[in-house]
Length: 347
Ligand code: SF4
Image 1: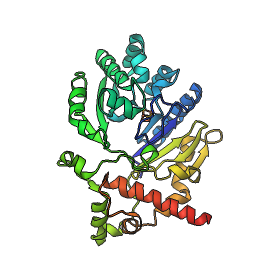
Image 2 (image 1 turned 45 degrees about the vertical axis):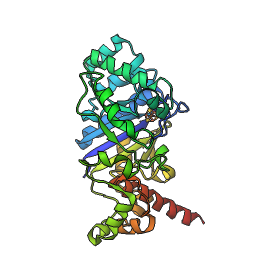
Image 3 (image 1 turned 180 degrees about the vertical axis):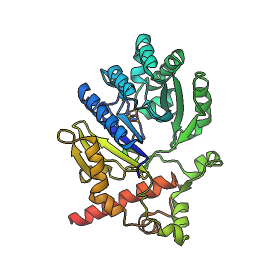
């Protein structure tokens, strides 16, 4: 049973080049035509009505960059496609430059939540986001959100360079306004996109102070030892078929691909093998059903390997970098397994 369908629509480029970006956002991307974006939103809304569950679209790279962002967002809101406090991630570029009239118009239409990512404050943020002025845009976006009573939530992706500034960043950002929802938090990236090679991933000695109250975080070495010493754990299939989460990815040309589940997206480098259909010929709903009825070959491959086999073949007992266990096993190791399978097949 599917509880969540997340639909990631690549419809615009980005102004930043963040160190951790899973979709490798950059100014080099293309814009999808507005009517095509809106057509996809209508199909996503149809799927939501059909499944009667959470079906949530997200735009990549940076939604506020689209020249007709306001029109797209108003349609998004009119079709009731928001989801919880996740629902609008942005680097603030377009929002910092949007007029008060447009902010007001969107706020009245239901635009009530934004999610902001920091990499530090000032120059540290700009350096890791890859653009001078990126931090200032977030600050201006918060000022505008405060003025128009839009809630915002904020957190920080940590790496070796910025981890020491976490507490100072949390304090500075938390003092930027009163509409901040919940507490400032930290995250580590999945091993995909620009973070795939683990560049700058934090080591245990660097963030042990932050792990005291957080469960599920291990060094790769510790998790390998845990899996290999626990036969019950080792027998579990690595991929959780029943997790209830399905991602669908739609590219600028409206091709639809399977995008993973709870396991993140281990298919980044073999996307053509998880192709589900083109929206020039079929619908989002048909692609979703195709995934269920005829799972692409890589999914069948991943369904056959256990956590123990993955740890033994691909785990690095010497590695003291920190991962969430689900990301480590179900993403980093599964990527290696797929690459090994297809490399072997082509030789
Ligand atoms: S702002 Fe978002 S989409 Fe753009 S590069 Fe950074 S993480 Fe990627």
